[in-house]
Image (cartoon, helix red, strand yellow):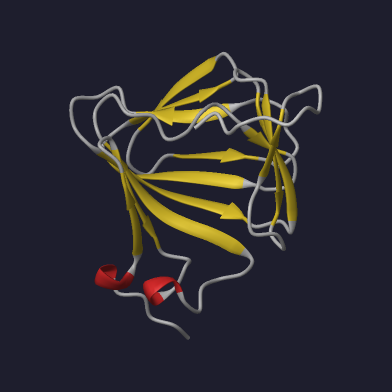
Length: 151
């Protein structure tokens, strides 16, 4: 068993979001191998990611505090604390989260970690080819040409 205290979690921060990685283990060591888990705080107006979908990884979002708007394809759904959204691997409908409220929102996000995944960003003509045995992701266009990350 590994205990991960809040002060030991890997944290990624931007001006609009804060991600606390639970699954990475204390100070990024001895983390989980089968799935990733984090608590993401989105400030008002922030989005979690660009619209995307995974070929090989399931994702789940569970709202802890505040409200969050889930965008999936053309569908928009408001979630409250205790609500969840699940995204099945291979479902070719892009999704992302948005905080449309005037207060921060916190969500637990859990996703499987496939050895190889293809992440499609339909609004940006980008595909991320992820092979966890390699140090970096490879980005291509829908036509298969080398490309930069849309982030």
